[in-house]
Length: 134
Image 1: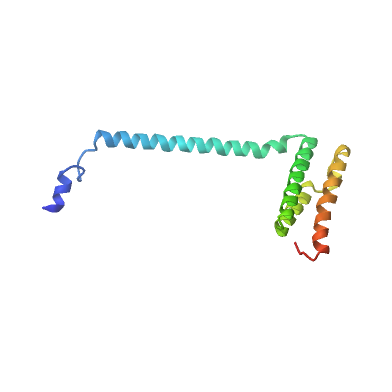
Image 2 (image 1 turned 120 degrees about the vertical axis):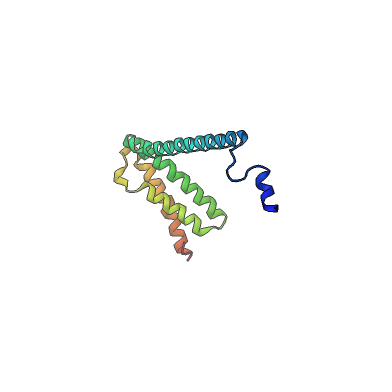
């Protein structure tokens, strides 16, 4: 008799769903759809951001690379000041990788390339001279 009492009190097998349950299910479904729509918009925005730079002229790409490499160099300097040698070295190497070869730079930007190369490579050389295998 005890196991039948719960079924008789509502929600047993074969009973029709209550109006409140239907409303709650619909609200849950709509919230899930809204969340999926927002995620889709975020993914599309991310893709747009990824392809933005590739559609820009070369001078804009180079300026972006210099700006990011300069930021990496400064982050490396900060980490160096905190005695985080390995992390600083990663930042310096990343900056060098980002700016790439000098020939890819327009004449007006070659000086920026050279300055960043000297700064980052010089800091990596200092690690090597001090025996810090960073």
